[in-house]
Length: 382
Image (cartoon, rainbow, N blue to C red; front, side, top):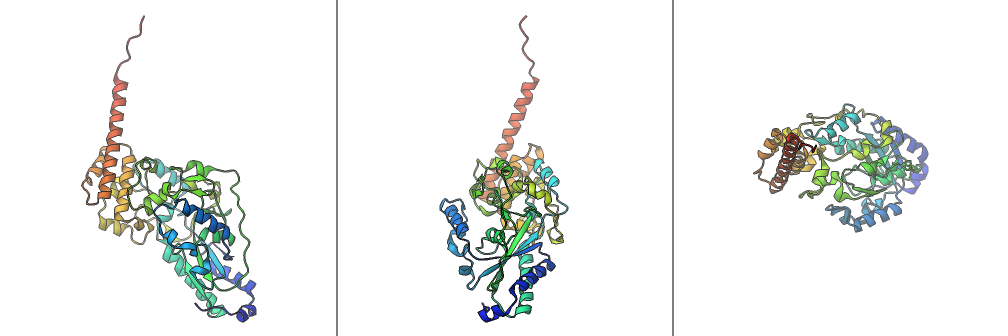
């Protein structure tokens, strides 16, 4: 990529340029913009230890990337700074109370709030490109590359160093004024801009995120066991979901938000102004049986341009089958499962069989409970 010469860099008022970059970013709709360096030694050590322990599950690509994730200049030669951006996504029509209500309704599907609207990748990259074009118009050709969850980047560590927030005990980024309902993006650059002050942590003694995790995937402060995480199980994992974890997933069919929903800092989060992130196709609380009745064509049509499509039809069907197994017993749930008992996918068939067995077990339990309550108590001795 083109690089800024030392002479050119010295001729610039880099502090003023940094201020203008932040203003341009906010004009493009980013909620916050900060600038970080590329030194990530402590974060690299944490990442490598996590990988050695196998906590990444089947995400083998994380190992294949080596140190490119924690050394920006290895990923993009010439990088000396990272412009980190934040874009809020919590839908204004899907508040936290509504999320809890959906989670409490076993007949409905819960989809992580970030996935209810348009896929964020293209939207953020497009705006980062506009930001890069604006910088180039000011300083001339310079080296850069835009990312948003699209390459091996330690985005949370970089955002923390750029002053956008701190990494909470649930391993997500938190901001005192905005909570955690936001996406991150990065512009790697060769511009030697002045650094922002890294954010300090403000979780204190709170452990709500650890305590609430349905599968206990947060094994301790700042420690995530991906192999137990519902987001991993319902999105990243492509095989069978371990049977012991299936009942714990509840009605979560794509991702999980529990650790964010209980976080006290999220009371300061503001609904996004981005109409693109508004819920689509009634997925903010759709009936599980209805979703399980979708054909592959219907799935592709109803998830077009949405993050949910990432699970694929087979993976999404697997997830919904598990949620139906966890649902309150009813004729409608049993009928929905039986309709796909001979599904062409062995993966889906396995999870349907499990779900039907779970439904049968619940019905037997309910019948036995009714029989016991209908049996009169034996007469008491005089």
